[in-house]
Length: 294
Ligand code: GRG
Picture 1 (cartoon, rainbow, N blue to C red):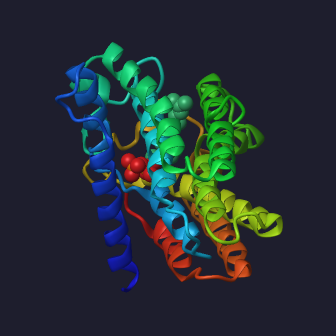
Picture 2 (picture 1 turned 135 degrees about the horizontal axis):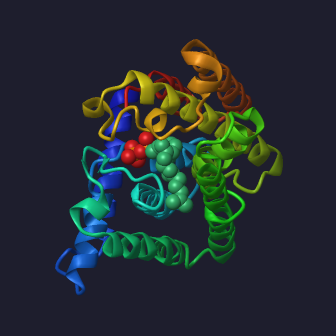
Picture 3 (picture 1 turned 90 degrees about the vertical axis):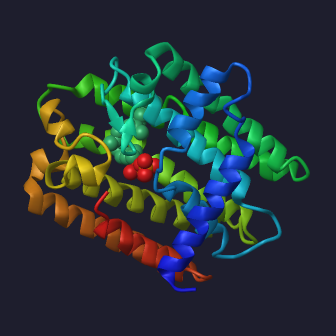
């Protein structure tokens, strides 16, 4: 299979596994489960689960990476639902559809996001029950990444910085924690599940690769906010600029942001190449993420 075929095959596998594992929309209370499905099924790129599958495939082992891949997508989806709320980023569109609170209501969207968080750890517990050390390590990576020093901390700092003077150090903190940490964790969890998962030197290199990939992803996201259309993006274009958000484009201009994305991409490639193993898919995905249009 070439790169695009493999990407599509993995996206389909993730979507099927997700559909099977999620409570059906007929499960009581139906409104909550419909809201969860509305957001999870809305057509995200499944980038994080695919990074997990790709990282396990670097040194394939005997454990299935899919439960971890789904768990990280649940946390990612909860963060999008809550980020779209009026109290946070106030976005009406997500993944080409009305945001959860627009399609349902605010209370339901809060609860849908709340429910997705324990569900992620429930799926890890079910998926790795027979490998307790692996379950503990994966839970620790995901809990730390989603917690107050990383994902939630990055979001807090982002909210606190709205309308403030541009500050490169602060922006780096926000992007490292709000965006790059979850991308790093996706790779790290997949690598941990594979055959070399307990090699600390390689783990450090995987973390480096993931962080650089995440920072490149965010620089591209900042660029797409000014260059993409709402139709292409599936969410409101120019949203950051309209909200007075500081981004790499406001700090460094379009060319500066593009240059930054290229530099982080190069760093991610170098770390991945240094790992050995079956890195071809992840290397192509790294380039694909730089060129993405949504
Ligand atoms: C509410 C705790 C909390 C955190 C929210 C995810 C997030 C943090 C904010 C979303 C705003 C944003 C543009 C973040 C940066 C990049 C990002 C996470 C984009 C969305 O990820 P994609 O493009 O989305 O992978 P899909 O829909 O394809 O999964």
